[in-house]
Image 1 (cartoon, rainbow over the protein chains, first blue to last red):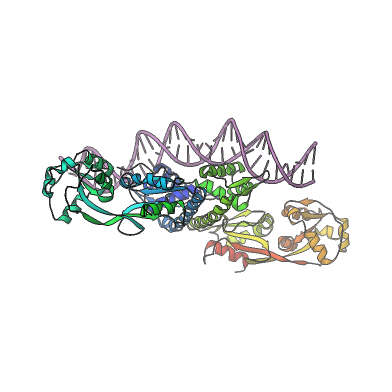
Image 2: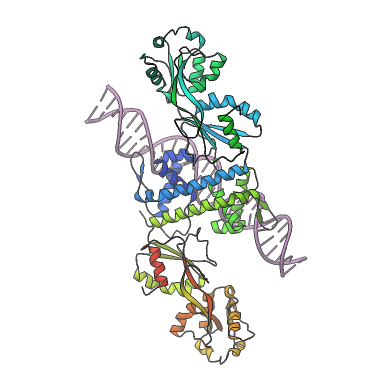
Length: 289
Length: 289
DNA sequence: AATTAGGGTCAGGAAAGTTAAGCCATGCCC
DNA sequence: GGGCATGGCTTAACTTTCCTGACCCTAATT
């Protein structure tokens, strides 16, 4: 590695951020995803930084990278500094756009739980602009671009609604289901990210039924298919409540299994009383109040 | 299947930095100088940020800009965050280039005091690479790119050498100076950034002598001219000591005026014992060891 | 009236990022 | 165990963005 030429210029900010993200996530691709750029850009940034410093920050391996001692030593302080910067950025945004609230949640929750509630929220506080981002996993709260984050968890945040499992299907299909064992004779829909739902419910009710059926990658799609009579879906209480009310889905069995987890709401930063984010949070937790 | 990537975009880092520098310095021009870009770039960055936020950060006035309430509210936290980032950056650099020490000082001190000492420093610690930057004013320590900063001041830092004033000139010229009043008959050299030197000395010795002579913008140039016999210069003790020793300059009058200030050394960050920066600092303060 | 100081604007050019292909170990599979 | 697919980083050409440099504008100063 060549010794650095007299670099009296400061280290490039974006390269530092790319390095920090790569160090924290442990992979260039993850860092790229977090920063919203392509992996090639992260490669270039880290490389530029290493050339500038005249020392390697990562060991390149065939599959992935690993921090060098230097990289490890430098990453911690950088992470702290960028956390502070993210906080300052969020505050600036909150000051400039006090009516913007950005919520992160699971795609299923966004579509099946949050979306139906938005009209009422808009009616209650029309000046607030709520934007929803669907993410597969809860974002890093310190670094997130969101104000609120609604995800299933067993603890933390504020409980919005408890989750429970029970099979649901179209009314026509329910007629063919007299007992749990009948599930073996109909398609059982499942969602790839909640793959264990059926196991959990069956184990809780003490039954063993061999089942098969299509697997969906979007829970909302599985719900639609269930409504269309394509099969029986393991329903998450809060996500199928609307269809149950309207009668487009019914619950063929009485056994409901409460899950230890519920949908819980976190805020990225302390909510100031009366702020738009606080209003939205309160609405989601206590829609009536 | 992954859900669509976050359409949320974060505020551009470089624009935030430009805004922070402009807010802290109070002027786009100064911010541009600090960042090493042109004022136009700062204009564009701040403008982009304001458009992104949908709110003004500065009030544009015919002559200069002034922070809006929003800008003022946002600037403080940003400054703190960027200070933290600068600290992390400096630490990264120190880890990667442990033998680099960067010193900021006045041009006159660089040329007339520091430069003559560098050979001895190199001999004492040949592995350390010292780079010197001449600045007209002491840099912001928290944000500086330098490790050490050597500037005249009345307090703070570590005292390296006291400053005192007394006229100096070439030996041949000294013969024509019997008393202070004779200064009126010879050119009196002065430096534009130390314009008050003559006043200070004359007032201290209780004389009033009308004088004129060329004004230099570089003190080192004035010293060279004095050596060449072009006139009498108000010498700063530490900066003319070498010439006095070699006899290329002499002090025609006995009156020496000690200044309340001396050359003082600051370090941007706490010096770790044994670090290259600490070695250089110790050498400058106590050259004998 | 002329000068100066500070921002704003615009065309052109340098340096980001993107897209798509390439590498290279690992792990799977027959 | 060789063949083959996979995951992750890299590379190269292209595109977009950002910076520069020269100019204009306004208000305060000389």
